[in-house]
Length: 448
Ligand code: EPZ
Image 1: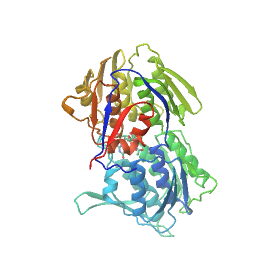
Image 2: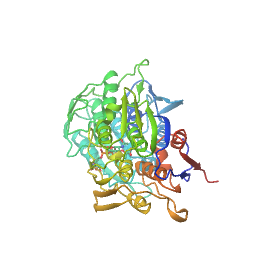
Image 3: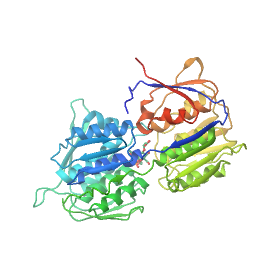
């Protein structure tokens, strides 16, 4: 993927008609593959990862890892990662500041090499997104934490593992998360895999991406119990690295957030759309809500078919929640869909405090949305949407808000221009090609 970061999308809207038809194939999950890539540091043998999405974030993670001395080979849809040599443990500042998932590799690096240095990670601006729970967890495992200044004035964490007879090793500990954190669960779990002794993580996140990571690590010699439950018990190997099995690569699970994004698009703009290579069991809450809203959905083991019923769609309320609840990453596309349903909907965002920035764009397009407080909006539908006047551009504030404005532009009457498509490319592979195949009139403009 190579977005020139200033690419734009031009979208000619359907003016409320539901005419898109065809098949859309789901990619491997961005938020699974980035963590599997980070896990390569735990291995004494090279790691093969399959069903890899071609997105900006996978490119960025590869660049970050190459900068540490990890050798990577890219094949179509697959990665071969060899992290078996002595590596640097200083994360590249700029890449780390541009992608939240960079923080996940600090666990394996600290556990294997006894030290790691990195900035507070950046990524989607959807709230403050601190890493206090990571730091607290490292301290509980015996690590010493200091903060130094980077040349540009940013703070950088310098973390060292405690000494033991063999040099250094994180110590098993009991860590209770005050709130469920996906990255915190994944990072401290991977650190615990190489620690000395038993680690118990409580109030863990239970996302399918975490379960798939645990299953793979256990197949390679880790001892992690409790996958899919709030309590993980990890018996550390005291520094003994994991071993890959050449016949069993890590196969990235389908991207459930991408699937949900396309479900709402199909419900709002589709005549007859089939979403393939997906995992419907990861989306039960969303599918049930859409069926109750009047959407005709047919479910098969690895694909979902959405057909227009011709009847008006009815509104519903959303309260985002950790898995298996309604995912916060699907909130923005769902709000756009709700503007096309009859009745009032209340959407309460419980996870991030700054995830409604895109709503202003929708209101300018004609949506009836009122902010009740920083965490709650009220939607009154259905309202026709129209492209912004005078060629004013729609802004993509983050990956999922970017998809939301694409959906709004597809629904709208008129032609829309979408700016900073780079964010969309971070999380959705070849989005314009796949939407074009459904009949959408979308073009990528690459500035000279
Ligand atoms: C992961 O982010 C995903 N990103 C996010 O997806 C997703 O929105 C989020 O999980 C929640 O599902 C990746 O996996 C790369 P958290 P993460 O730690 O791990 C607070 C996308 O669009 N918190 O579960 O960073 C935090 O501020 C992205 O694909 C602390 O306070 O999310 C938030 O309010 C956007 N201190 C809550 O926990 C900490 O140390 C949940 O965050 C860590 C987190």
